[in-house]
Length: 257
Image (cartoon, rainbow, N blue to C red):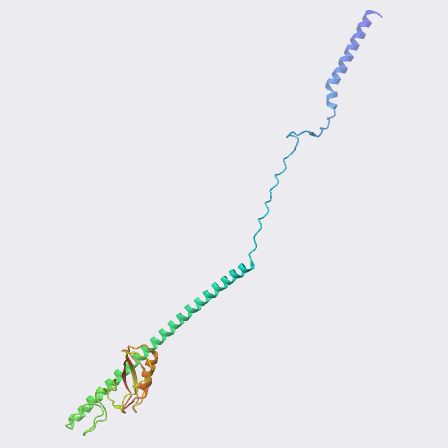
């Protein structure tokens, strides 16, 4: 083999090697398959290999044992609650009873005031009528030369009525314009040992009978028995008759036994 042939062979081999190398560095990396990454496994106690830390385990504290209440103590507590409830109910009932009594007492007081007002108005009307009759009688008597001192008095020596209309009997007194007392005042029957007076307002009809009686102002005794005894005695009293209804009072004086 001559020298030019050797030289050309050598050049061909070098070019071939370069081409192979070029293909290895350019083409072969693009076809390289990606290897799958493996899973890291830690066989030690490193923090990176432990994964996420589990949540801390909550410590459960057992409840403290409750001491049972003895049956006797439970019964005592229940009894105390019941007694307190009953006591409160009793207090409320007592307050309600007192309020009711106050209302009833106020109603009675108002009724008594109204009754006294009516009696006083009626008494004033009757007194005015009697005064008018007396004036007319005196006027007529003057025509005939006679003077009449009160209603019910006629010509002559007798009188048909008491113009003063008041008097006393057995330590008690009465006032009833134009009327006389027949007999004596009935005395109250009582056993109480109390001192004072009871004034009874009376209403007398034309026949002289007491048809109504009630406690009037001026009374100093609050005992209900004495008041009722005075009212009952007043109703039994008898007066002289008259032309119309008369209104007056009877005063009973009570003394200590």
